[in-house]
Length: 161
Length: 101
Image (cartoon, rainbow over all chains, first blue to last red; front, top):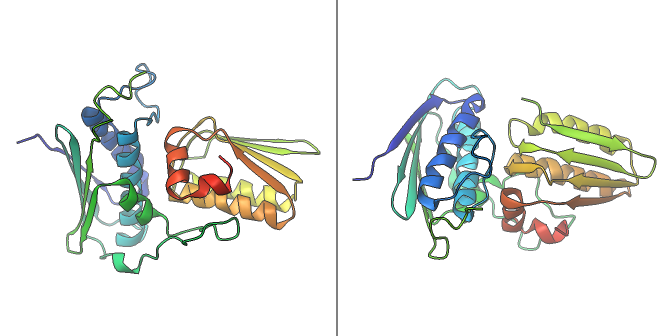
């Protein structure tokens, strides 16, 4: 069984960057991508398509939990379990805040022009589109399960430069 | 956590350079600057994203607000040099064509 990386942070946006950093590094374990500057491990260096998809989706889910489950007030924790497999990454995000009604998320406008650009409601759309699978089970605890597979043309090392 | 950004103004153009991560934590600070830029009704705005590493939906919303605000005052706006993760997000949201990225 693949080892799982576990991280628990308070359920506020203050701890978002820590969680994103851990997820980005876990994505690199699967994609094999290297940092642009190995001497600056804290840089926001997300270039490989696999890393991009995982980090983009996770950022939106973390935002959603902090804003909708914990109402920007914290009061609970966010438990993150990341399992890097040979060619895929599975992330589970648990919280004990208010359940989220995912069915109420409106789709993006079918036709997008300068006047119809949305100013909100994009987060879940980004996460769902970036991933191969995304499920949500209302709780408590509420559970987001994210899965991203490494495409055949994204072989390990493809992101190296 | 302030958004690292610079604003350069001339009579003809306002240039907004955004660096690092534009996200739910940093976008509110930039939003205040965006309000100031829109209120000044510049004839032309350039947003340079060459040094922007990460963006989330909150960051996108801030840029959309700027885009709509400048066009609403009759100005022109160009978003340039988006790359990597931010460019992928704009493409996913189909905003790359609207922004001419």
